[in-house]
Image (tube, rainbow, N blue to C red; front, side, top):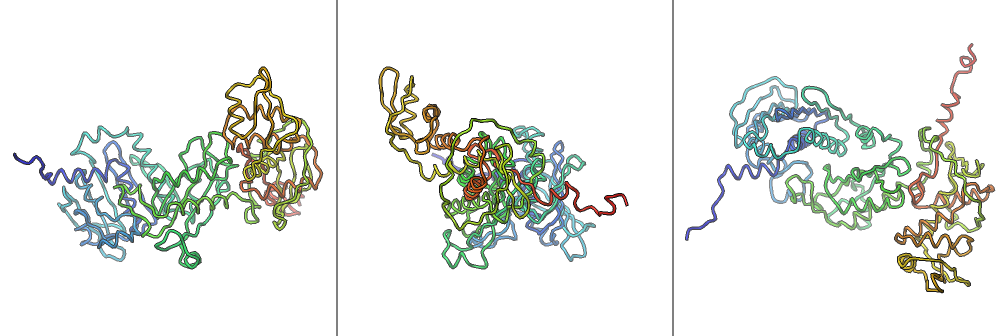
Length: 564
């Protein structure tokens, strides 16, 4: 019986391989722009013509000489790796040598290039399989221009299976933006159908790039933290490695939760060594670190760029290199959590913050019942420096706090709520009470909910239930019965802790003296997430001295201000 297993024809192999690398206009842009970055470009211009299935990428990089152009589009040709060992020391974006060759299989490919310092440029036209079909000397500035036309002309069913032109254009925009986040030192200009579409200007850091991509986010809404990641073969550093001067810096930029957030989880982005990747584990770590700092159904703005030793990564998991194998995942998760916690803290470095005065219009006047509160508990850290000094109370609601660079308005209820919530998270206690609290007409679901929180509840008669222990913070409150009913309506332990903290916190409308205000400020400054309450509301409004000076025009020349 004849064998049914046969080797595939070469042209079929090329089509399959090409389809793994090039699957859309956006993938063409990604591959060509990454080549430009590998060539040291500082300015990259992308032209797309979706109707003609064309892409052109021009850069001012190192360029290629005649010999390089001869080999550029042949199968598996690259200047970036030469031996098996190089696969574990990859420092470039491209290394497989498949992109240009794949394009010759799927489209018409032309490259113009002139090396830096070269005296002449060349124009090469490639045919199927990467063979050079035409070449000539041409006038061109140092750098490279790659033109791709008639993409998928020999594979029309693939065109028909692609998204609409509008969706493909959006995908191109997304690719360029993602690359710009990872390489902010480069200027990117994109043209569509011979018209300039958008430009992303270079910056010293990614903080300059994000507002260009998200216009509603200002640079003052962002906080950047540098992570020191060990540059060694071990994902867990020794003391010597951690102190090494060769330790590379990784970047974490977060949108401060009291200033910006999203209605979709679409702006938590993770990059490693210059490329955005898909990492559900690291993304979930970021989401978890922002837990109870954002309003309900809102998501953080966060960009994480890890600079990891190449021997810790295996890029050969997916042709697009967006899925990788990363060693020591739990270590990176721990570092990310610590970095986000550091970015959310209030310190001398970020006490002088600038917040736009439009935030003032969002202050709410809240009228709530007055209550009695105990502010005599001692600070957990008497050595912590008090950055804020209480000077007054406004409307029995806002604490006016002074610091060296201006003043803050702190909303007393939600600041106290943040303090109590973190205390509850650290020390959740259920304590017995002398006289049981009697609840009336509970459903079985409500009873089960209270039991799941650790409360001792039992029948006490027809439609009556007796609760014999309660959360410690509710022990001396007159409204403990109402609080238990609130807890019975569902939610996990953290939901219960938020509810208890909210009910126990000092109410707006309650007068406070200066020592009480100062004690609250001190305790609040030491919380792990001082920017928002557990519901995600902003706790304070910052007014810098420089902003006050501009508003009151204190820098005017005296003679001119008097009309002299």
